[in-house]
Image 1 (cartoon, one colour):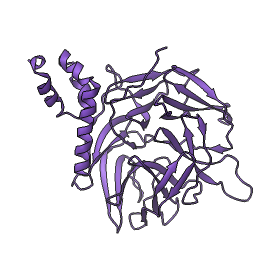
Image 2: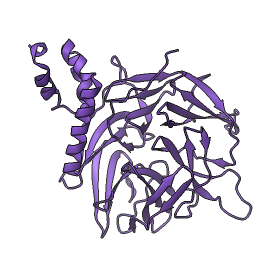
Image 3: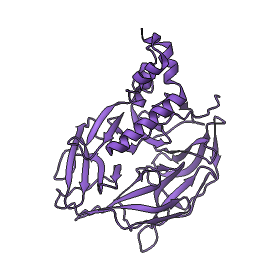
Image 4: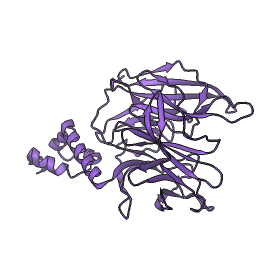
Length: 383
């Protein structure tokens, strides 16, 4: 009987499983259910997994493809560099839910639903799931960010846009949800900047960074663009932070994290020769940023003239191998965007397309974020 195994042997058996699969064994027996929820055990298991990944020179990412979230391993030394480890456990034990957007912070995923009816914060490792209720209602154009303050209290930031019947903007509110009080509050923010709906924030060290622009179009010129940080400790937006390039409307810009201490920014012109550039920060704080020389600069014109989507742009960087992985659909050369594709791009013309399957929903762009499992539990006061 599995329940009769000594604890050390049970630990040995469970340690063979990915930490994100521990929840599957909880119905096996009471002893395994208790062990899989033991935070000291899961911390040791996570530590072993991270050491193995570092030794194999791979890292894990979460991808959303066709409204489903799966865990992948990226190892660019392998013939199959992007390996699907499995779909993450359903947020609802009875029914699958369609997820339209994902954000990662501290081992937690903030997920918005396709039907915009619900918002959830979810730890795939521990199984902790917190469904959030709005003050009034959620809407299609809401923007979100997940972070935490200096005391490790987790919070959700929400941009609430109000429109008239002709879809003209009337008002934008900012509100924040604190898990320790289980409540929303409206923030006093009157911005002179704007963040496009398609630009997802990047959670980094508990704060969130966005690609932003002037709200008012300047006479005789183009918008100025910059990086903007929301500090979850002070619950305020910081000063405008410089970018290492000057973009124009419809250029592709995306943000990604590089390990624990750096972020990267991807930039591609929307017109020929579609040169792709990626910079990595040398310093990044809520009030300051500096950039290294371009990490990668690739002329995409010889590569079928690929221009990555303005609405997509999720990417990952392997700094050691000087390679980037960009998620998009089958694009370039008049292709019909019915396949989810990972584009692997490096120096000296290195280029590879990895097909991630059919894209049955043309409006669902593939999204991804780096993922490190965590045994952390959010202290959530139930309403």
